[in-house]
Amino acid sequence: MQGCASIPNLGRVLKQMGYEPELAAEGATAVALYAKAKEAGRCFDAVILDLTVRGAMGGQEAVRALLALDPAARAVVMSGHSDDEVMQDYSRHGFKGALTKPFDREALLDVLARVLS
Image (tube, rainbow, N blue to C red; front, side):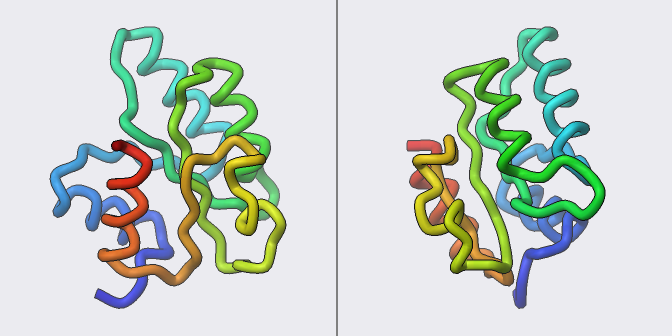
């Protein structure tokens, strides 16, 4: 598999890996999905957030909102800008892992294994 940069491709790969992904085009929707699931007594194993979303809430703002809802939330940041400060020091920004786009299935497996262990 080439890269998993787009949301539909990422969702498909996660399904193939045995996960049940819920997809959101931007951070505010992801936070709302997380809050709704938490209210219903369900939890997400992890959340993968794109650092930059044009015209909408990106990963840095979304992870702050998620951690306010659930301090135990496990979020992974993804970006094509590997030199960004958030990507370089993701844990300081509330993330448990980072994926540099484009990434392959093995990189996704690796980061999820680390984040979920």
